[in-house]
Image (tube, rainbow, N blue to C red):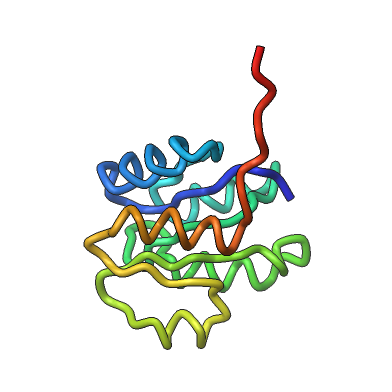
Length: 126
């Protein structure tokens, strides 16, 4: 597993907000605009966690969750669901590590990622 966080959301402004907040803490982030794009990215490397919107075109968050369950190397991948339409108990039902409701509270994003992933690896300062 790598030390980057994959943020999957079809709304570019949400992705940017979340990535900026995580990068401020020292996490590396990668973005995908739907589940299909996320799956393509996961062929190369498995992130430390995935922050996942559920309602997206092309491949929804539900579709990505199903695909990840079939990937042995993604079996222990922490998924944090970010949704304006779901409920925390739904996240537990699908085995997600956490749930953040929309509109996104960036403090909740920061604390949830830190609790689930741990602190970011400290980059070497030149």
